[in-house]
Length: 304
Image (cartoon, rainbow, N blue to C red; front, side, top):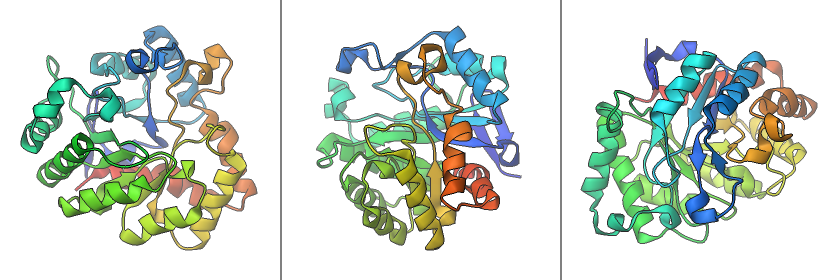
């Protein structure tokens, strides 16, 4: 039985249940964005938000807060212990705007060594190991040199560890450029996902990626500044009708205070309580929903 590394240790993949494969629980973007929206640091608040998700039927969350976003593996473990949710932590570097200056001077090998250590030994000062590399970001108008190094390093570490890779690719078709870099560097596309594909409303972009053999993520559910959720649901239904059911992941990518229930938002349970009904209305069956929310992310996270 394959196991997935969570912040509380390895868990059989079949125990992951309902999975949200791209979320943020503890994150701080103030250094770059200079506003409070992207500051989620209060453990009691986040325990309550995750508990709401579990009560709604959720079981697992993949927390893709990595270097540049102020990850807190120990805090994630406390949330997991308090709620019973499985939490999988990511490793890597977000994107150029959030990079430390010293990354300019690091080689692909040095970046790979850092991520490899987080996966095989644990995050510094802890025994908590990363279960995924991501979200590895790039600028939406093109991949910058340091971002390319990070993607190349991730492909190397993936070959060595069998861990999946997840990217951050907003608005444009930059995911194709990411995919080109990853594939050239030897990444296994069977355990690689291009993120935020639903922020580009052209379905042909999703199709281009799918035809290459990579996973795609419609993981900005609830972010209406990028696309209406009804259209997201219709797009997913269309892709399913074309035979792509087993290559799609869905999530909400919550990383802001106003999306939490304590601040008047819908919280992490939104995917279950509000978006799944939209999928049903679009013609997606219960069996297909189970594949989208359980089988697919379990298969992806199991790695190689």
